[in-house]
Amino acid sequence: MSEKLIIAIDGPAGSGKSTTAKLLAKKLGYLYIDTGAMYRAVTLYAIKNNILNDEKKIIELASDLDIELKFEDGQTKVRVNGKDVTDEIRSLEVNQNVSPVSKIEGVRKILVQKQKEMGKNGGVVMEGRDITTVVFPNADVKIFLTASIDERARRRALEFAQKGQQVDIEKVKQNILERDRIDSSRDVSPLTKSPDAIEIDTSNLSIDQQVDLILEESKKVADKKGIKLTIN
Image 1 (cartoon, rainbow, N blue to C red):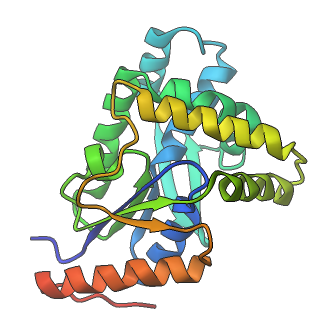
Image 2 (image 1 turned 90 degrees about the horizontal axis):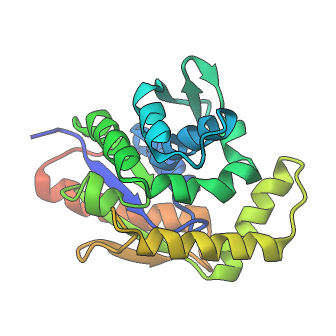
């Protein structure tokens, strides 16, 4: 038995997964793994190589890319073949194309295997869109975050604004709704809430409140399993 927990956080775009998972990992001294960043990295390089319409080549690309995630200075640095692409993978163009790439079965199989390898020893907070159902269905703590579409769009627009990119919030909202549709209806690993995941609506919660709720649940699970949690 691992002496550390596997904490899995699921939910749609803009529900607060990344920000919550980062802070939670920092408080626990756990490794934060942003699985969505891996799909974004593949999407970025599919765009760079002009192969967005060629599934076979995208699958080969996913297999060939060396994607490395490292939590440094409070954020996950994403490197592909040694190059830092942390900012590039958050562009609007990647946002608009990541869902179609993510629904490719071969891509998901390759990246899910890499994700399982990263988290197998515990001591991780992993977030994404199929973490509690496909990647780690036996995670110690399973959380499903939700939020209203207006709040999710507001958060996304704010992220872009902080990077100096002005976007039309209505377009952001439509982009999120389209991603929801694709993510929820895809044949492979659709976005669904695991029956045993705890659902938290983050629409009116601060990040600290979200983290505290998950910490509370994590403490209960750790106590039952005889695992000591150290909170920083």
